[in-house]
Amino acid sequence: MAQMLKADNMFSPCPVDSGDEIFPNGIFEFNITKIIDHIQRNPDSIHLKEVLVKDFYTGFSSVNESYMEHVEISRPIILAEISPRQYNVIDGNHRLEKAHRMGIKTIHAHRLNVKQHIKFLISKRTYTTYIEYWNSKLK
Image 1: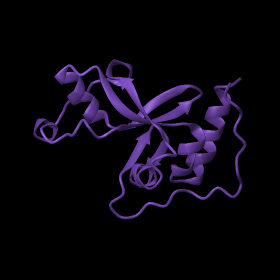
Image 2 (image 1 turned 90 degrees about the vertical axis):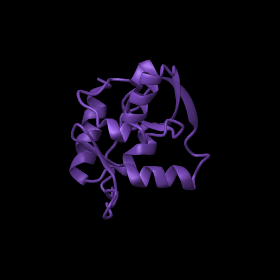
Image 3 (image 1 turned 60 degrees about the vertical axis):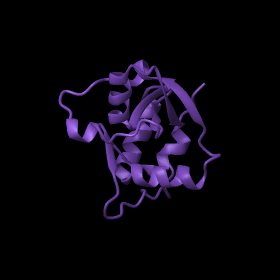
Image 4 (image 1 turned 30 degrees about the vertical axis):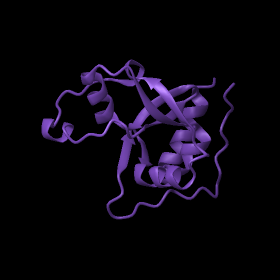
């Protein structure tokens, strides 16, 4: 069972360096570059799972087809637990698109639970809003 989150008044937003990839999931902005760095430096901290493409594939309204040729589907996607037991893609939508087109049924994913990904939010406002959002899903 998911637990209520308590805001940490000492929360420090994840820094954003020039060139970092930021993913906005609604109002929640994650530093994807720092997440990937963390996974690479701590490979045992976030387990690799095989997930069904159909469970996360949403499709694109328009795709840069020349970019799709270079998408490497062997690179795991990143899923974040946005609300209790609900994971969203925060990195890898193009890989899912390519896997779907190729008829591939499963893809590897790093699944970050709330405690693993919350430290990669890039602003205090996003952090406090996220805590409120998460807790509202438990009521």
